[in-house]
Length: 328
Image 1 (cartoon, rainbow, N blue to C red):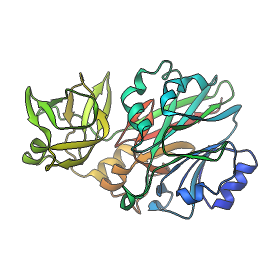
Image 2 (image 1 turned 90 degrees about the vertical axis):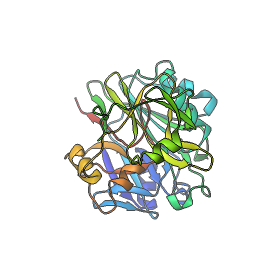
Image 3 (image 1 turned 180 degrees about the vertical axis):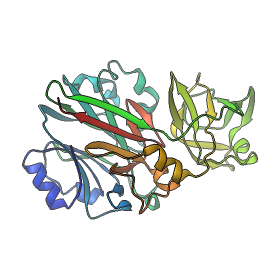
Image 4 (image 1 turned 135 degrees about the horizontal axis):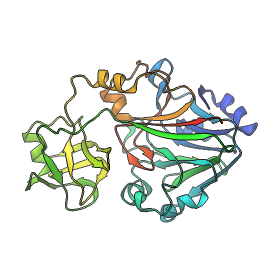
C-alpha cells in the first residue's frame, strides 16, 4: 500500500496503467482524472509527511498493491442496504459518502442494521469542502469507473487480495467517558440535532444546558457499544432556535456521557496515535485537525485526507480510522 500526494498528471498516469486507487482532492482536480479503478471524494485538508495542510493543486492517493480483483460502483441512497452484496472473498470495501447528503444521514442512522455489513472490513470517509465554503460548495464523491460525480449516494470500491493476506481495521479515539461525574444523556429521537435531552433523569433544553454549564464542546458525547467507545461530536449550539446540531446522530435507547477533559488536545492526540502508519490507509477527522492543531504538525506516518466523518463499519467522528493489509 502506497500513500502519496500527487499532481493530476501523476495520478492520471497511475490510473491509466490500471492501479487500484482511492483519491481525495479539490473537485476541480478530481474531475480531470481519467476513468479507471478508483473512487474519490472532495477534501482540501490533508495530513502529509510534512504535516497538516490545505492543498488545492494536488490529490492524495492511496494505491492498493497486489490486488486480486476489484470492482467500483455507485450505490444510490435508496440501495445503501445492498453494500455487502459486492463484498469479495478475502477482501475489504472502501465507501465514500458526501457530507450533509441524504446518504450521510441514512447510513449514519441505519448502517449498522444492514444485512452482512460486518462481514468484511468496511472503511471510508465522508467528503467535505473548505470550512469557508460551507453552505456554498457541495461535497462530492466520484465513481472513477464512470467519472460520475455525486452529491448524494455512495461511491464504493470492493477489493480482493490474495488468500493468506491479513486485513485489519482499527480506530484511534483519544477520548474516554467522564466516569467520575457520571452525567448521563439520553434522547427521545434519532438524528443529527436535538432540542432536548434527558440529563441524569431530568428533561432539559440541551442548548441551555451546554451553555449554562460551560461545557467544552470540543469534547464529544460518548456511548459505549460493547466496549467500543463511539463519539458524537457537537457541531453547533443554536440558542435562538434552542437546538444543538451534531456531526453524527444521537440514537434513542443509548446512554451517552461527556468525554473526560484533556490537559492538552494536541498532546493527547500525539500520544494516543504514537508512531507507525506506514503502508496503512487512514483518514482523520476535521475536528482532530482543528482542535489538535495539526496544521504544520506531523502525525508520524499516518498520512491521508482530513474528513467530515470516518467510517469503520459505522459512521464515526473525532477519530482516526486505519486499514492495514499484511501480506501472507
